[in-house]
Amino acid sequence: MPLPRTRGTALRHRLAELRGPDVAAKALDARALAALAANPGCKRRAILDGAGVNKAALASALGSPSAFGQSQFALTRGNAFEAKVKADGGAELLRLVHEKLDRTAEPPAHARVPELAAIGPEGRTARTALALREAGEARGEWTLLDHPMLALDVAGSPAFLEPDAVVVHPDGSWTVVEIKSFPMLDGSADPAKVGAAARQAAVYVLALEQIAARLGAEPTPAEVPRRRSASDSAPAPRVRHRVLLVCPKDFSNLPTAAAVDVRKQRAVTARQLARLTRIEDIADALPDGICFSPDLPADDLTAAVESVPATYAPECLSACELAFHCRARSRASGAVTSLGRSVRAELGGLTTVEDVLSAARGETGDPDDPAVAALRRAARLRAEALGREAQTLGRQAQAAGRPADTLGLEAVAPCR
Image (cartoon, rainbow, N blue to C red; front, side, top):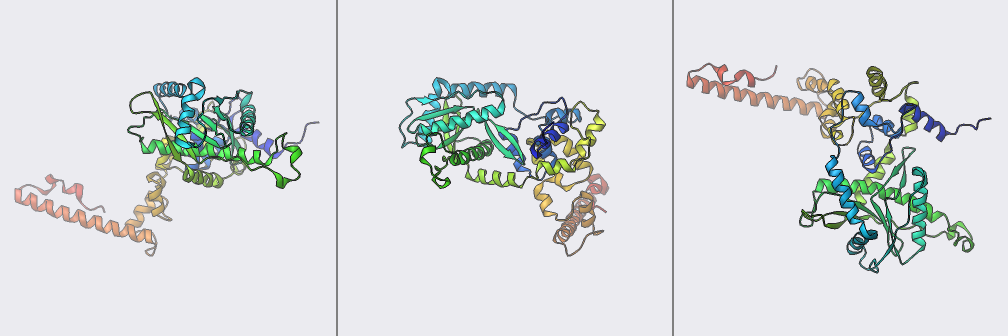
């Protein structure tokens, strides 16, 4: 007799159906989570990422392939630089951690580098948690976790994350290390790239905090005889909110580093992830038989994607593989979100470009609405400016003895 299906099992089965029976799930990474948290109102991205849909393949099947991503040259250069930083058991990496974050500790003459290999992401996640616990018990030693596997609950579904490294200090605290291939010139790097790295590291910090909370609640075998009640539980390990960003120095391949405080990014990411619509609710609202497999006919696939509402913004172009498809649909429907979130926020209840133009012309809209009043005032100022320009060009044409339209008066005439 088969066991009854639990809610979690039912959800995984439903997400597998949405992905396609023979399509492997694409795991979420920290970069995708940072982008997902930046647009929490987009149900389309939430369900596609939650189901493990390969959005790049989906975009190509829809006829709107994505045009962003790292080049092969950048990937090769980044991998070579990371290998250089972690050479000799991570000696240079640990030296930078000691120099930038923990000068009061003993210099890392040697460090423990536990083996984290296991079967599947769940196995690697459990092995990482065990290695972190063992490192916490070995106080007074440095420990380097090379590419650990962390799990973070996102809208009811686990996301498996793989930071470049996590260092356990002699005092038992944990530090996230991000290794990037963009340079630090005279001790500073591109602020936009540093910000993106900080948001990505903040996701790892959140995942480590969940592990730390579990380890603080669960006694180790050595602690069991000493604990008499739940109140005797040991404090959770401390996850440092200053991460180490390692980059090439100037135009060389020599590593340098800077400490980056990610408390702000961590708070924003935690708040945005908590506001995400739960994947179960989105999946339950979809029609039966919906599937996002790229092997489906184009018309069926388009209908399936359009059955999930999207919230497009220009920022999606640098963060989501479906951005071109969503932009085309947003423009076709005349949605003002295609102009940017700041414009959308200023327009209040006017949700389409046609509504905005109609309100500006005085054909529709409540005059007492601040957005409508501002649009009408802007339209009057524009008409006055174009009218004065037309008069100026007319006088110039008359002085030159030429017809007015030769100076482009029709192009600057007020819109009617």
